[in-house]
Length: 350
Ligand code: NAD
Ligand code: IPM
Ligand code: MN
Figure 1 (spheres, rainbow, N blue to C red):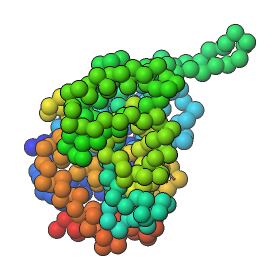
Figure 2: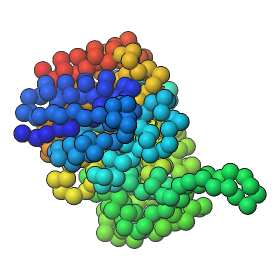
Figure 3: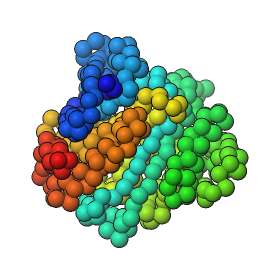
């Protein structure tokens, strides 16, 4: 019986994860679930955002279903005690270097995006975001500079091995789709990016069937608004991928629509599945959160960790059907509660 570790986290994390778990249970796949605290919720219970028992469960499980972490109450804590440290820590502990973030426009959501319907029509892209390196994990700190001024610093860097393995995921992903790979960097300024570009170019000789382009991140941000449907697969570093995926979410109508898979590459290794959004403290506890990103993350879990493509597609079809049937949370311009949106998806599964 496959074991799913459920880490609901903070804010809307538990609300959306409840709906994702319901949908998985409705499929009757004989999964077992075990829950553990993470983030601010774990800090309140045990004084640490990522308790060792939670890491142990995540490692023991076949896959991890993650909600969201983050809470303004903990922003003044030292960094290693903040909720975000738990998410970065678990990604690192599980070696989840590849973050797959698909952005697709579901039928009927053309008008949910603030962009014109004709601009977002046909949107179907995947951002392959590197997840365990970059400026996120370099040395960081505070010091006083020579003028006596306080200074903060974060070291940015990649080694060629880190670039090659994520670029390979990018090429492989493109190969299974429309065979277009756009590598996004800032090679005109950053040496980290120039190495990135060199390594991607070198690897491209192994993928002559994939059309590779390079784009600077500032241009990519612009093109995502101008012609988002042109993109097929984007491969990029940790920081740029974080920013561009939130931006891409609005082409799909809402950040509440975008799921993700975080993978370690090894076959059979357990992945982690989570919405790209955060804990949304501004709407937490009000039943306003859109659970679709979490539900679609559960579909990715079935696809990537349990190799159950048919059930993954059933969930995606059920979300599509619920939306076509008019189910909409407030972020999509509707009045459905989180629970009612979950109801609509479960209904559509039957
Ligand atoms: P956020 O993604 O939590 O929220 C941004 C905006 O989007 C808010 O207005 C929120 O209400 C809305 N939103 C987000 N998810 C939604 C959903 N499912 N349905 C409807 N509306 C939704 O980003 P933020 O406000 O910058 O960060 C809040 C906290 O979350 C911070 O502590 C941050 O560090 C954390 N965070 C965690 C993750 C994660 O757990 N993966 C991701 C991003 C941010
Ligand atoms: C995300 C989040 C995280 C990130 C934060 C909360 C550490 O924004 O998952 O997109 O930057 O990776
Ligand atoms: Mn983010």
